Length: 516
Ligand code: HEM
Image (tube, protein in one colour):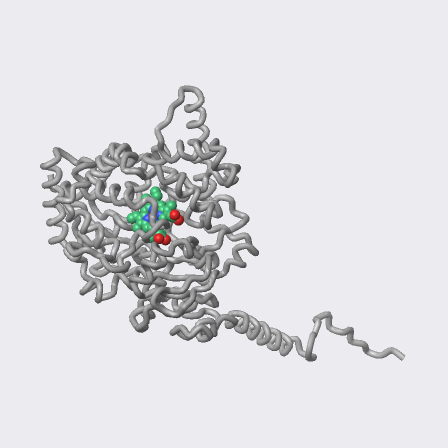
Protein backbone atom coordinates (compact mmCIF):
# COMPACT_ATOMS: atom_id res chain seq x y z
CA UNK A 1 0.00 0.00 0.00
CA UNK A 2 1.29 3.44 -0.93
CA UNK A 3 1.41 5.90 1.94
CA UNK A 4 1.84 9.62 1.48
CA UNK A 5 5.24 10.26 2.92
CA UNK A 6 6.52 13.69 3.80
CA UNK A 7 10.29 13.84 3.79
CA UNK A 8 11.78 15.38 6.97
CA UNK A 9 12.62 19.06 6.59
CA UNK A 10 16.32 19.60 5.92
CA UNK A 11 16.22 22.41 8.53
CA UNK A 12 18.12 21.23 11.51
CA UNK A 13 16.23 21.71 14.76
CA UNK A 14 18.44 21.54 17.78
CA UNK A 15 16.39 21.75 20.93
CA UNK A 16 12.69 22.04 20.16
CA UNK A 17 10.63 21.12 17.12
CA UNK A 18 10.53 24.76 16.00
CA UNK A 19 13.52 26.46 14.44
CA UNK A 20 12.13 29.83 15.54
CA UNK A 21 12.13 28.80 19.21
CA UNK A 22 15.59 27.29 18.77
CA UNK A 23 16.77 30.59 17.38
CA UNK A 24 15.35 32.55 20.33
CA UNK A 25 16.99 30.16 22.81
CA UNK A 26 20.27 30.38 20.93
CA UNK A 27 20.11 34.20 20.83
CA UNK A 28 19.32 34.49 24.54
CA UNK A 29 22.13 32.09 25.46
CA UNK A 30 24.70 33.93 23.35
CA UNK A 31 23.57 37.31 24.73
CA UNK A 32 23.81 35.97 28.27
CA UNK A 33 27.33 34.64 27.65
CA UNK A 34 28.46 37.90 26.05
CA UNK A 35 27.07 39.94 28.96
CA UNK A 36 28.69 37.56 31.46
CA UNK A 37 31.99 37.77 29.58
CA UNK A 38 31.92 41.56 29.57
CA UNK A 39 30.89 41.68 33.24
CA UNK A 40 33.81 39.58 34.42
CA UNK A 41 35.76 42.61 35.71
CA UNK A 42 32.81 44.55 37.12
CA UNK A 43 33.82 44.01 40.74
CA UNK A 44 37.48 44.90 40.05
CA UNK A 45 37.40 48.17 41.98
CA UNK A 46 34.87 47.02 44.58
CA UNK A 47 37.21 44.22 45.62
CA UNK A 48 40.04 46.68 45.88
CA UNK A 49 38.16 49.28 47.92
CA UNK A 50 38.31 52.03 45.28
CA UNK A 51 35.46 54.47 44.53
CA UNK A 52 34.17 53.71 41.04
CA UNK A 53 31.35 54.36 38.63
CA UNK A 54 29.09 51.35 38.23
CA UNK A 55 29.44 49.99 34.70
CA UNK A 56 26.53 49.22 32.34
CA UNK A 57 26.48 45.82 30.66
CA UNK A 58 28.98 45.51 27.76
CA UNK A 59 29.66 49.25 27.31
CA UNK A 60 30.90 50.00 30.82
CA UNK A 61 30.77 53.77 31.40
CA UNK A 62 31.12 54.80 27.76
CA UNK A 63 27.80 53.79 26.20
CA UNK A 64 27.18 57.25 24.78
CA UNK A 65 30.63 57.21 23.14
CA UNK A 66 29.70 53.92 21.50
CA UNK A 67 26.43 55.40 20.26
CA UNK A 68 28.40 58.36 18.91
CA UNK A 69 26.33 60.73 21.07
CA UNK A 70 29.17 62.17 23.13
CA UNK A 71 32.94 62.34 22.87
CA UNK A 72 35.24 60.58 25.32
CA UNK A 73 36.49 63.89 26.74
CA UNK A 74 33.06 64.97 27.95
CA UNK A 75 32.21 61.56 29.41
CA UNK A 76 35.47 61.64 31.37
CA UNK A 77 34.68 65.19 32.46
CA UNK A 78 31.19 64.28 33.74
CA UNK A 79 32.66 61.48 35.86
CA UNK A 80 35.56 63.68 37.03
CA UNK A 81 33.20 66.50 38.07
CA UNK A 82 30.95 64.14 40.01
CA UNK A 83 33.68 62.22 41.83
CA UNK A 84 35.38 63.70 44.85
CA UNK A 85 38.45 61.50 45.25
CA UNK A 86 42.14 61.75 44.31
CA UNK A 87 41.70 58.62 42.18
CA UNK A 88 38.75 56.49 41.15
CA UNK A 89 37.76 53.65 38.88
CA UNK A 90 35.77 53.52 35.66
CA UNK A 91 35.21 51.13 32.78
CA UNK A 92 35.77 51.44 29.06
CA UNK A 93 33.66 48.47 28.00
CA UNK A 94 34.92 45.62 30.20
CA UNK A 95 38.32 47.17 30.87
CA UNK A 96 38.86 48.78 34.30
CA UNK A 97 40.84 52.04 34.31
CA UNK A 98 42.16 53.88 37.33
CA UNK A 99 41.62 57.61 36.77
CA UNK A 100 43.95 60.05 38.52
CA UNK A 101 42.40 63.34 39.61
CA UNK A 102 45.05 64.55 42.02
CA UNK A 103 47.76 66.66 40.30
CA UNK A 104 50.33 65.28 42.75
CA UNK A 105 49.51 61.68 41.85
CA UNK A 106 49.61 62.59 38.16
CA UNK A 107 53.12 63.93 38.64
CA UNK A 108 54.17 60.75 40.45
CA UNK A 109 52.98 58.56 37.58
CA UNK A 110 54.18 60.67 34.67
CA UNK A 111 57.53 61.74 36.07
CA UNK A 112 58.75 60.66 39.49
CA UNK A 113 57.79 56.99 39.23
CA UNK A 114 57.88 56.79 35.45
CA UNK A 115 59.84 53.51 35.71
CA UNK A 116 56.60 51.79 36.82
CA UNK A 117 54.46 53.42 34.14
CA UNK A 118 56.52 53.44 31.00
CA UNK A 119 54.01 51.99 28.51
CA UNK A 120 50.79 53.22 26.97
CA UNK A 121 47.66 51.07 26.87
CA UNK A 122 47.24 50.62 23.11
CA UNK A 123 47.39 47.27 21.32
CA UNK A 124 50.56 46.65 19.38
CA UNK A 125 49.30 44.88 16.28
CA UNK A 126 51.81 42.05 15.97
CA UNK A 127 51.00 41.58 12.28
CA UNK A 128 51.60 45.23 11.37
CA UNK A 129 55.33 45.98 11.16
CA UNK A 130 54.80 49.72 10.82
CA UNK A 131 52.29 50.39 13.60
CA UNK A 132 53.91 47.98 16.05
CA UNK A 133 57.26 49.72 15.71
CA UNK A 134 56.05 53.31 15.95
CA UNK A 135 57.51 55.02 18.98
CA UNK A 136 54.06 55.96 20.31
CA UNK A 137 53.07 52.27 20.62
CA UNK A 138 56.40 50.74 21.59
CA UNK A 139 57.05 49.29 25.03
CA UNK A 140 59.90 49.30 27.54
CA UNK A 141 63.45 48.97 26.28
CA UNK A 142 62.50 49.15 22.60
CA UNK A 143 60.77 52.47 23.19
CA UNK A 144 63.70 53.80 25.26
CA UNK A 145 66.17 52.96 22.52
CA UNK A 146 64.07 54.45 19.73
CA UNK A 147 63.33 57.62 21.69
CA UNK A 148 67.02 58.12 22.51
CA UNK A 149 68.05 57.63 18.89
CA UNK A 150 65.33 59.82 17.38
CA UNK A 151 65.51 62.68 19.93
CA UNK A 152 68.42 64.42 18.12
CA UNK A 153 65.99 65.48 15.36
CA UNK A 154 64.45 67.91 17.88
CA UNK A 155 67.43 69.65 19.51
CA UNK A 156 67.43 73.48 19.59
CA UNK A 157 70.23 73.43 17.02
CA UNK A 158 68.15 71.32 14.63
CA UNK A 159 65.08 73.48 15.12
CA UNK A 160 67.12 76.56 14.41
CA UNK A 161 68.55 74.85 11.34
CA UNK A 162 65.05 74.07 10.03
CA UNK A 163 63.74 77.55 10.75
CA UNK A 164 64.40 78.90 7.24
CA UNK A 165 62.08 76.22 5.83
CA UNK A 166 59.30 77.08 8.27
CA UNK A 167 59.68 80.78 7.52
CA UNK A 168 59.53 80.15 3.79
CA UNK A 169 56.47 77.98 4.41
CA UNK A 170 54.86 80.91 6.28
CA UNK A 171 55.50 83.17 3.28
CA UNK A 172 53.95 80.60 0.94
CA UNK A 173 50.92 80.52 3.24
CA UNK A 174 50.51 84.29 3.04
CA UNK A 175 50.69 84.13 -0.79
CA UNK A 176 48.17 81.31 -0.78
CA UNK A 177 45.77 83.25 1.42
CA UNK A 178 46.06 86.36 -0.73
CA UNK A 179 44.70 84.30 -3.60
CA UNK A 180 42.17 82.35 -1.51
CA UNK A 181 40.97 84.81 1.11
CA UNK A 182 37.21 84.31 1.20
CA UNK A 183 35.16 81.52 2.72
CA UNK A 184 38.25 79.62 3.78
CA UNK A 185 37.77 76.16 5.27
CA UNK A 186 40.16 76.48 8.22
CA UNK A 187 41.01 72.82 8.61
CA UNK A 188 41.75 72.33 4.91
CA UNK A 189 43.87 75.46 4.74
CA UNK A 190 45.88 74.76 7.90
CA UNK A 191 46.58 71.19 6.80
CA UNK A 192 48.16 72.55 3.61
CA UNK A 193 50.55 74.63 5.72
CA UNK A 194 51.34 71.94 8.31
CA UNK A 195 51.82 69.05 5.90
CA UNK A 196 54.03 71.14 3.65
CA UNK A 197 56.22 72.17 6.60
CA UNK A 198 56.56 68.73 8.19
CA UNK A 199 57.33 67.04 4.87
CA UNK A 200 59.96 69.61 3.97
CA UNK A 201 61.57 69.77 7.43
CA UNK A 202 61.69 66.08 8.23
CA UNK A 203 61.92 64.32 4.90
CA UNK A 204 63.23 66.90 2.49
CA UNK A 205 60.26 66.41 0.15
CA UNK A 206 58.01 69.15 -1.16
CA UNK A 207 54.39 68.04 -1.47
CA UNK A 208 53.40 71.39 -3.11
CA UNK A 209 50.41 71.91 -0.83
CA UNK A 210 50.64 75.71 -0.85
CA UNK A 211 51.00 76.28 -4.55
CA UNK A 212 47.79 77.67 -5.90
CA UNK A 213 46.37 75.61 -8.75
CA UNK A 214 48.87 72.75 -8.25
CA UNK A 215 47.28 69.44 -7.37
CA UNK A 216 49.03 67.71 -4.47
CA UNK A 217 48.40 63.98 -4.45
CA UNK A 218 50.11 63.71 -1.06
CA UNK A 219 47.71 66.28 0.46
CA UNK A 220 44.66 64.59 -1.07
CA UNK A 221 45.62 61.22 0.36
CA UNK A 222 46.49 62.50 3.83
CA UNK A 223 43.31 64.59 3.94
CA UNK A 224 41.23 61.59 2.98
CA UNK A 225 42.75 59.48 5.76
CA UNK A 226 42.72 62.12 8.47
CA UNK A 227 39.03 62.57 9.47
CA UNK A 228 37.95 59.43 11.35
CA UNK A 229 34.84 57.72 10.02
CA UNK A 230 32.54 55.75 12.30
CA UNK A 231 34.35 52.59 11.19
CA UNK A 232 37.73 54.16 12.02
CA UNK A 233 36.38 55.04 15.48
CA UNK A 234 35.30 51.43 16.05
CA UNK A 235 38.70 50.20 14.92
CA UNK A 236 40.33 52.63 17.32
CA UNK A 237 38.19 51.24 20.17
CA UNK A 238 39.61 47.80 19.39
CA UNK A 239 43.18 49.13 19.56
CA UNK A 240 42.40 50.64 22.94
CA UNK A 241 40.01 48.26 24.62
CA UNK A 242 39.72 45.04 22.62
CA UNK A 243 43.29 44.00 21.97
CA UNK A 244 42.33 40.41 21.21
CA UNK A 245 40.12 41.52 18.31
CA UNK A 246 43.07 43.41 16.81
CA UNK A 247 45.12 40.22 16.73
CA UNK A 248 42.27 37.92 15.76
CA UNK A 249 41.01 40.02 12.82
CA UNK A 250 44.48 41.37 12.03
CA UNK A 251 43.10 44.90 12.17
CA UNK A 252 45.19 47.79 10.89
CA UNK A 253 44.98 51.08 12.65
CA UNK A 254 45.56 53.36 9.69
CA UNK A 255 43.88 53.86 6.33
CA UNK A 256 45.54 51.38 3.93
CA UNK A 257 45.67 53.73 0.95
CA UNK A 258 47.44 56.33 3.09
CA UNK A 259 49.90 53.79 4.54
CA UNK A 260 50.79 52.41 1.10
CA UNK A 261 51.26 55.84 -0.42
CA UNK A 262 53.42 57.04 2.47
CA UNK A 263 55.43 53.81 2.52
CA UNK A 264 56.27 54.23 -1.18
CA UNK A 265 57.12 57.89 -0.73
CA UNK A 266 59.38 57.29 2.29
CA UNK A 267 61.06 54.32 0.63
CA UNK A 268 61.89 56.52 -2.36
CA UNK A 269 63.23 59.27 -0.09
CA UNK A 270 65.41 56.83 1.86
CA UNK A 271 66.75 55.26 -1.35
CA UNK A 272 67.62 58.64 -2.88
CA UNK A 273 69.28 59.77 0.32
CA UNK A 274 71.32 56.61 0.67
CA UNK A 275 72.54 57.03 -2.88
CA UNK A 276 73.40 60.70 -2.26
CA UNK A 277 75.32 59.69 0.84
CA UNK A 278 77.25 57.02 -1.04
CA UNK A 279 78.05 59.16 -4.08
CA UNK A 280 78.88 62.55 -2.51
CA UNK A 281 78.65 62.04 1.26
CA UNK A 282 75.61 64.31 1.42
CA UNK A 283 73.80 64.66 4.78
CA UNK A 284 71.23 67.18 5.98
CA UNK A 285 70.68 65.59 9.41
CA UNK A 286 66.93 65.39 9.12
CA UNK A 287 64.66 62.46 9.95
CA UNK A 288 65.64 60.61 6.77
CA UNK A 289 69.34 60.82 7.70
CA UNK A 290 68.67 59.63 11.25
CA UNK A 291 66.76 56.62 9.92
CA UNK A 292 69.62 55.73 7.55
CA UNK A 293 72.08 56.06 10.47
CA UNK A 294 69.95 53.66 12.52
CA UNK A 295 69.75 51.16 9.68
CA UNK A 296 73.54 50.83 9.73
CA UNK A 297 74.06 51.31 13.49
CA UNK A 298 75.37 47.93 14.70
CA UNK A 299 74.72 48.69 18.37
CA UNK A 300 71.10 49.65 17.67
CA UNK A 301 70.51 46.62 15.45
CA UNK A 302 71.92 44.29 18.12
CA UNK A 303 68.95 45.17 20.35
CA UNK A 304 66.35 45.96 17.80
CA UNK A 305 65.55 44.40 14.44
CA UNK A 306 65.21 47.29 12.02
CA UNK A 307 64.68 45.44 8.75
CA UNK A 308 61.83 45.53 6.21
CA UNK A 309 58.94 47.93 6.75
CA UNK A 310 60.07 48.67 10.32
CA UNK A 311 62.34 51.32 8.93
CA UNK A 312 59.25 53.30 7.91
CA UNK A 313 57.64 53.30 11.34
CA UNK A 314 59.19 56.48 12.78
CA UNK A 315 58.82 58.68 9.68
CA UNK A 316 55.21 57.60 9.43
CA UNK A 317 54.73 58.25 13.15
CA UNK A 318 56.07 61.80 12.82
CA UNK A 319 53.84 62.51 9.90
CA UNK A 320 50.73 61.21 11.61
CA UNK A 321 51.45 62.50 15.12
CA UNK A 322 52.62 65.85 13.86
CA UNK A 323 50.22 66.60 11.06
CA UNK A 324 46.77 66.05 12.61
CA UNK A 325 47.62 67.59 15.97
CA UNK A 326 49.28 70.74 14.61
CA UNK A 327 46.59 71.18 11.97
CA UNK A 328 43.90 71.10 14.66
CA UNK A 329 45.84 73.48 16.94
CA UNK A 330 46.16 76.06 14.19
CA UNK A 331 42.52 75.58 13.17
CA UNK A 332 41.24 76.11 16.72
CA UNK A 333 43.57 79.07 17.31
CA UNK A 334 42.42 80.88 14.16
CA UNK A 335 38.79 80.14 14.99
CA UNK A 336 39.16 81.56 18.53
CA UNK A 337 40.97 84.62 17.17
CA UNK A 338 38.11 85.10 14.73
CA UNK A 339 35.41 85.06 17.41
CA UNK A 340 37.55 87.02 19.91
CA UNK A 341 38.65 90.09 17.88
CA UNK A 342 40.12 91.80 20.98
CA UNK A 343 42.54 88.87 21.46
CA UNK A 344 43.34 88.94 17.75
CA UNK A 345 44.17 92.61 17.84
CA UNK A 346 46.37 92.23 20.93
CA UNK A 347 48.20 89.35 19.29
CA UNK A 348 48.72 91.44 16.14
CA UNK A 349 50.29 94.22 18.24
CA UNK A 350 52.65 91.75 19.94
CA UNK A 351 53.71 90.19 16.63
CA UNK A 352 54.20 93.54 14.90
CA UNK A 353 56.33 94.72 17.81
CA UNK A 354 58.46 91.58 17.55
CA UNK A 355 58.83 91.98 13.78
CA UNK A 356 59.88 95.64 14.24
CA UNK A 357 62.37 94.80 16.98
CA UNK A 358 63.96 91.87 15.12
CA UNK A 359 63.63 93.19 11.54
CA UNK A 360 61.29 90.36 10.48
CA UNK A 361 60.18 86.94 11.64
CA UNK A 362 63.26 85.37 13.24
CA UNK A 363 63.91 82.33 15.40
CA UNK A 364 65.33 84.55 18.14
CA UNK A 365 62.30 86.86 18.07
CA UNK A 366 59.88 83.98 18.39
CA UNK A 367 61.86 82.61 21.36
CA UNK A 368 62.05 86.02 23.09
CA UNK A 369 59.96 86.00 26.30
CA UNK A 370 59.16 89.70 25.73
CA UNK A 371 56.53 88.60 23.18
CA UNK A 372 55.08 85.87 25.34
CA UNK A 373 51.53 86.85 24.35
CA UNK A 374 51.98 84.59 21.29
CA UNK A 375 52.84 81.68 23.63
CA UNK A 376 49.90 82.56 25.87
CA UNK A 377 47.44 82.43 22.97
CA UNK A 378 48.74 78.99 21.96
CA UNK A 379 48.74 77.78 25.57
CA UNK A 380 45.08 78.78 25.85
CA UNK A 381 44.23 76.94 22.61
CA UNK A 382 45.95 73.84 23.95
CA UNK A 383 44.05 74.14 27.22
CA UNK A 384 40.67 74.40 25.52
CA UNK A 385 41.42 71.92 22.75
CA UNK A 386 44.06 69.41 23.88
CA UNK A 387 44.98 67.08 21.01
CA UNK A 388 44.13 63.95 23.00
CA UNK A 389 41.27 63.81 25.53
CA UNK A 390 43.34 61.80 27.99
CA UNK A 391 46.82 60.42 28.59
CA UNK A 392 47.20 56.75 29.32
CA UNK A 393 49.78 54.52 30.96
CA UNK A 394 50.04 50.83 31.88
CA UNK A 395 51.63 49.86 35.18
CA UNK A 396 54.65 47.62 34.52
CA UNK A 397 55.47 46.69 38.13
CA UNK A 398 53.41 46.97 41.34
CA UNK A 399 53.50 50.42 42.87
CA UNK A 400 51.87 51.97 45.94
CA UNK A 401 50.38 55.38 45.19
CA UNK A 402 52.10 57.79 47.62
CA UNK A 403 49.95 59.00 50.50
CA UNK A 404 47.39 56.22 49.91
CA UNK A 405 47.13 52.54 50.70
CA UNK A 406 46.34 51.66 47.09
CA UNK A 407 48.79 49.44 45.25
CA UNK A 408 48.55 49.70 41.48
CA UNK A 409 49.18 46.19 40.17
CA UNK A 410 51.29 45.26 37.16
CA UNK A 411 49.07 45.42 34.05
CA UNK A 412 46.57 47.91 35.53
CA UNK A 413 45.66 50.77 33.21
CA UNK A 414 45.80 54.42 34.20
CA UNK A 415 44.06 57.48 32.75
CA UNK A 416 44.99 61.11 33.21
CA UNK A 417 41.83 62.99 32.12
CA UNK A 418 43.41 65.95 30.29
CA UNK A 419 40.14 67.42 29.01
CA UNK A 420 38.48 67.32 32.45
CA UNK A 421 41.53 68.84 34.16
CA UNK A 422 41.75 71.65 31.60
CA UNK A 423 38.11 72.59 32.27
CA UNK A 424 38.32 72.32 36.08
CA UNK A 425 37.27 75.73 37.49
CA UNK A 426 39.61 75.21 40.42
CA UNK A 427 42.59 75.58 38.09
CA UNK A 428 41.05 77.59 35.25
CA UNK A 429 38.19 79.89 36.35
CA UNK A 430 35.54 80.55 33.69
CA UNK A 431 36.97 77.65 31.66
CA UNK A 432 34.82 78.10 28.53
CA UNK A 433 36.22 81.60 27.97
CA UNK A 434 39.21 81.91 25.62
CA UNK A 435 41.43 83.95 27.89
CA UNK A 436 45.20 83.86 27.16
CA UNK A 437 45.83 86.17 30.16
CA UNK A 438 45.24 83.26 32.51
CA UNK A 439 48.70 82.04 31.50
CA UNK A 440 50.32 85.12 33.06
CA UNK A 441 50.18 82.93 36.16
CA UNK A 442 52.42 79.85 36.23
CA UNK A 443 50.69 76.51 35.96
CA UNK A 444 51.60 73.06 37.34
CA UNK A 445 53.47 74.52 40.32
CA UNK A 446 52.43 71.74 42.67
CA UNK A 447 51.57 68.74 40.49
CA UNK A 448 50.22 68.49 36.95
CA UNK A 449 46.80 69.70 35.81
CA UNK A 450 47.81 71.27 32.48
CA UNK A 451 49.19 68.56 30.19
CA UNK A 452 48.46 69.30 26.50
CA UNK A 453 51.70 67.64 25.39
CA UNK A 454 51.83 65.07 28.19
CA UNK A 455 54.68 65.23 30.69
CA UNK A 456 57.75 63.30 31.72
CA UNK A 457 60.03 61.07 29.61
CA UNK A 458 57.11 60.01 27.41
CA UNK A 459 55.81 63.51 26.69
CA UNK A 460 55.35 64.63 23.08
CA UNK A 461 58.74 64.49 21.39
CA UNK A 462 57.67 67.08 18.80
CA UNK A 463 56.27 69.75 21.14
CA UNK A 464 58.96 72.37 20.57
CA UNK A 465 58.82 71.87 16.82
CA UNK A 466 55.02 72.10 16.88
CA UNK A 467 55.05 75.33 18.89
CA UNK A 468 57.68 76.91 16.63
CA UNK A 469 55.69 75.91 13.56
CA UNK A 470 52.49 77.38 15.03
CA UNK A 471 54.22 80.61 16.01
CA UNK A 472 55.58 81.01 12.47
CA UNK A 473 52.06 80.50 11.10
CA UNK A 474 50.51 83.11 13.41
CA UNK A 475 53.34 85.62 12.83
CA UNK A 476 52.88 85.23 9.09
CA UNK A 477 49.08 85.41 9.01
CA UNK A 478 48.02 87.84 11.72
CA UNK A 479 49.98 90.99 10.66
CA UNK A 480 48.73 90.52 7.08
CA UNK A 481 45.10 89.51 7.53
CA UNK A 482 42.17 90.06 9.82
CA UNK A 483 40.43 86.75 10.50
CA UNK A 484 36.74 87.51 10.24
CA UNK A 485 33.43 85.73 10.68
CA UNK A 486 31.24 84.74 7.77
CA UNK A 487 27.53 83.88 8.05
CA UNK A 488 28.67 80.23 8.19
CA UNK A 489 31.09 80.64 11.12
CA UNK A 490 29.59 78.96 14.20
CA UNK A 491 29.22 81.28 17.19
CA UNK A 492 30.22 78.45 19.54
CA UNK A 493 32.48 75.49 18.95
CA UNK A 494 30.75 72.15 18.71
CA UNK A 495 32.92 69.05 18.74
CA UNK A 496 32.50 65.89 16.72
CA UNK A 497 31.58 62.93 18.95
CA UNK A 498 33.72 60.60 16.82
CA UNK A 499 37.33 60.06 17.74
CA UNK A 500 39.67 60.42 20.65
CA UNK A 501 40.66 63.97 19.97
CA UNK A 502 38.97 67.33 19.73
CA UNK A 503 37.71 67.78 16.17
CA UNK A 504 35.17 70.46 15.17
CA UNK A 505 31.76 69.20 14.15
CA UNK A 506 31.27 70.45 10.64
CA UNK A 507 33.43 72.93 8.80
CA UNK A 508 34.83 76.17 10.20
CA UNK A 509 34.56 78.78 7.46
CA UNK A 510 36.13 82.24 7.89
CA UNK A 511 37.34 85.15 5.77
CA UNK A 512 40.92 86.43 5.72
CA UNK A 513 40.59 90.19 5.04
CA UNK A 514 43.94 91.56 3.77
CA UNK A 515 45.31 94.38 5.95
CA UNK A 516 48.02 95.61 3.58
C1 HEM B 1 50.25 70.90 18.61
C2 HEM B 1 50.80 69.78 18.23
C3 HEM B 1 50.95 68.54 19.06
C4 HEM B 1 50.27 68.15 20.19
C5 HEM B 1 49.19 68.91 20.94
C6 HEM B 1 50.81 66.86 20.57
C7 HEM B 1 50.40 66.14 21.69
C8 HEM B 1 50.93 64.93 22.07
C9 HEM B 1 50.53 64.19 23.25
C10 HEM B 1 49.46 64.64 24.25
C11 HEM B 1 51.28 63.06 23.30
C12 HEM B 1 51.22 61.99 24.39
C13 HEM B 1 52.16 62.40 25.51
C14 HEM B 1 52.12 61.52 26.74
O1 HEM B 1 51.61 60.41 26.68
O2 HEM B 1 52.62 61.97 27.81
C15 HEM B 1 52.16 63.06 22.15
C16 HEM B 1 53.08 62.08 21.87
C17 HEM B 1 53.88 62.08 20.74
N1 HEM B 1 53.97 63.09 19.79
FE1 HEM B 1 52.95 64.83 19.79
N2 HEM B 1 51.77 66.50 19.69
C18 HEM B 1 51.91 67.49 18.75
C19 HEM B 1 52.80 67.55 17.70
C20 HEM B 1 53.72 66.58 17.40
C21 HEM B 1 54.69 66.67 16.33
C22 HEM B 1 54.88 67.87 15.40
C23 HEM B 1 55.38 65.48 16.33
C24 HEM B 1 56.50 65.02 15.45
C25 HEM B 1 56.99 65.67 14.47
C26 HEM B 1 54.85 64.68 17.42
C27 HEM B 1 55.30 63.42 17.74
C28 HEM B 1 54.88 62.70 18.84
C29 HEM B 1 55.40 61.38 19.18
C30 HEM B 1 56.43 60.59 18.38
C31 HEM B 1 54.78 61.00 20.38
C32 HEM B 1 55.03 59.72 21.16
C33 HEM B 1 56.21 59.97 22.11
C34 HEM B 1 56.63 58.73 22.89
O3 HEM B 1 55.88 57.78 23.01
O4 HEM B 1 57.77 58.75 23.38
N3 HEM B 1 53.86 65.37 18.04
N4 HEM B 1 51.93 64.21 21.42
